[in-house]
Image (cartoon, rainbow, N blue to C red; front, side, top):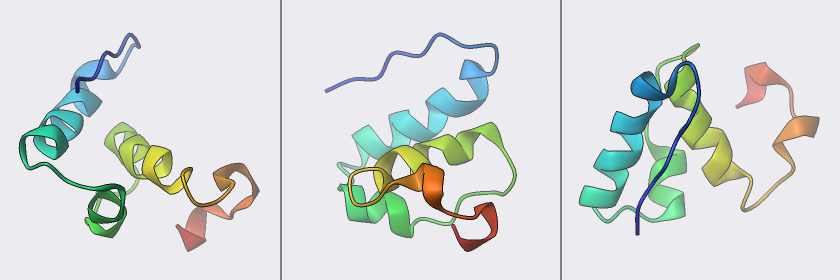
Length: 63
């Protein structure tokens, strides 16, 4: 398992993905983790939530 990111703010996000892999976190573990808001790293949480629901239809304040 691994993560590849190519984006202007990838350096801010990659650490969160690396920790999730190292800790062998499951999707629910990632969702339940407190993510700093608002940051680019919060995108990891949105990606995990996408396994269960359509995040594009949710209010940003409910996440």
